[in-house]
Image 1: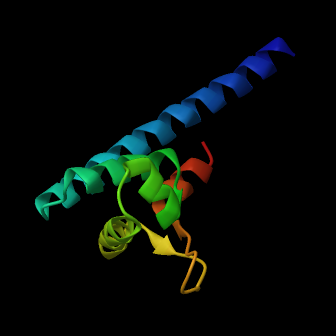
Image 2: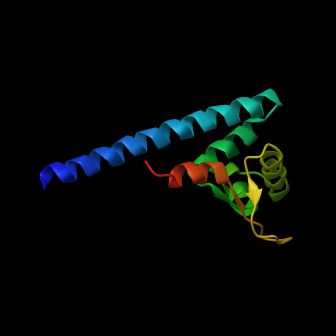
Image 3: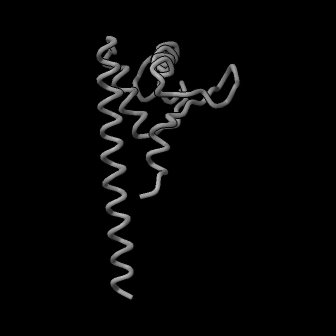
Length: 110
């Protein structure tokens, strides 16, 4: 019984390491792409924030980055244009955005 439990723990750990490596690779790819197109420090900070919380609103971005709501929306739009974020509400106000690739890696099986 102990061996069965330990194998389960090992499989979970191996899966977590794989997902972490995939997330790091994705982060590096996104960061390089944004830097190549002249991404600002605030935009790169938003990218980092998206990896911590892949569900985004303009209000949260404004608070986290200490920028105006307009600046937050502009940076969100840059991540949408880069294919990193997708708007998911279909509304004109109080929109929410998700980083689908990040969520897919987090939710994938080991």
